[in-house]
Image (cartoon, rainbow, N blue to C red; front, side, top):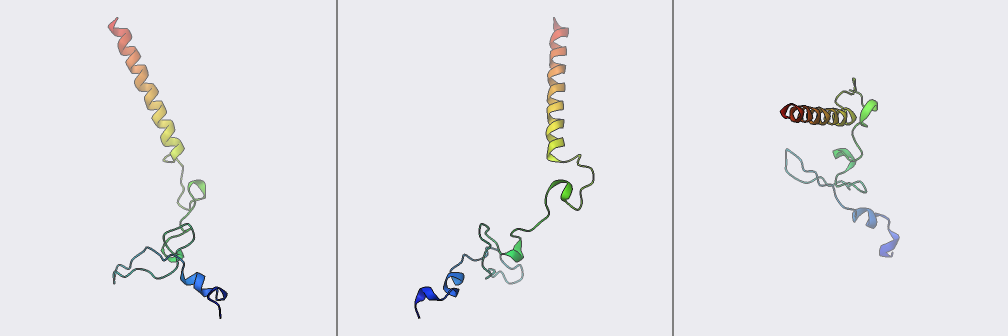
Length: 90
């Protein structure tokens, strides 16, 4: 039997999961998911989607959009106060 004929040779050559056991300290021996450093049991492709599709979504006031909007508003307020301060000095 040729080396290329057995599909398990390619499977056994796959990169392994980078996670380690807390209890034993030994590395996980499962194959890593393509494009990830960990296997499916250790978090590859896991987690919830961000935003309104997340199960604990409540109001979105701490979403990235709102954080950026508040930062812009605060910057405008700082500039306005600086302009007012400069006008009062004249």
